[in-house]
Length: 154
Image 1 (cartoon, rainbow, N blue to C red):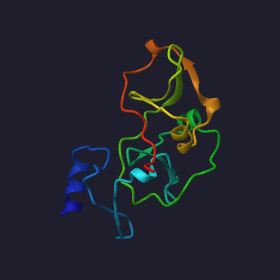
Image 2 (cartoon, helix red, strand yellow):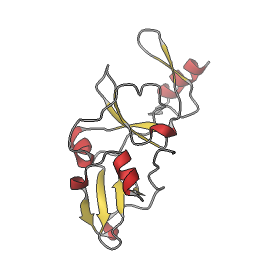
Image 3 (cartoon, rainbow, N blue to C red):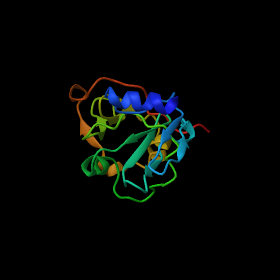
């Protein structure tokens, strides 16, 4: 039944698998159980089959859409994991997403569809972001405030 639901969603144009989906069919007729993984927040995964790179935020894998976006956030490929296929997939990062420091407040954000405050350096380091990638920008040039970027639970 779940596979039928996923097939129907693909036919109507849903571009990601919601957290409620529990199984995804893979080419070799294998089934992978999908889960929300909050303990994985900040990890980067590369799918060994497709070479696609994902970042876990809110317990979901978010596809990093292109190399330019990747290098807006990180300096290199170190730290990629290959064991993330069991984590549910969320909406892809917006192409061109970047790190920003608000000139008026000094707050650092992950900027995409919204600005997500990275409220501690511990969380910044959990995501392995590159400090040298942070852009100084005015508050007026940033999108609306979203949720804070979550760290891994302790």
